[in-house]
Length: 189
Image (tube, rainbow, N blue to C red; front, side, top):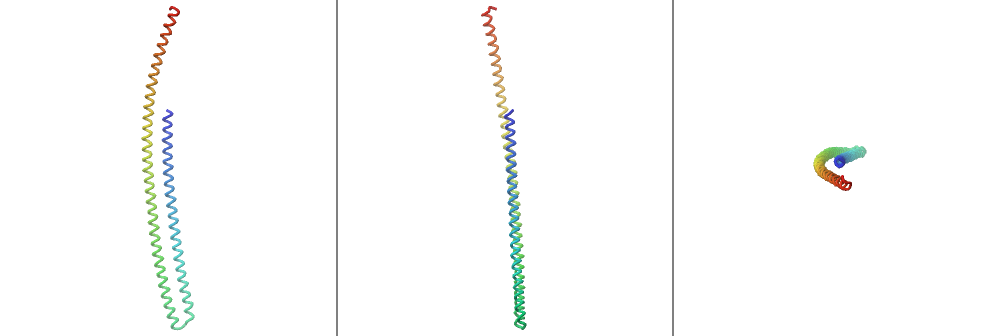
């Protein structure tokens, strides 16, 4: 009986340890996913800031060109100013286009990373579930086997006890008979 309780306790402890291991694995994957999301967000923010700085610098260059052009109010100055405006406009358009490309690329990479993290999380969850099922199955098998062994042991012990009881009873009867016989011979009755 005590052995059966011990087996049940061991079975419960094994199940709890398996559950704790699964929970720790799931928590670790969740934390890694959060870190990945934060890193991607930070990279996107840095790229956005850098592109904004480039656009600001382009605007400043345009302003500088306008200021210098104002000093020359003749045909050559107007032509230089027009060329500078066109170049600045082209540069601003290119910077905007590059920023859009970079933003799109960053979004795609972040989306891919998030998808990969989600897949990794799903795979880890499935493997943890499989592990739990396998562990639970093996624990149940071991528990059933232990119960069978305990039942066999109990049956053998019961048989031995019955044999011992029968032997003890026979020895008692034999001793009783011999003692009776001894006293009869001794006292003559």
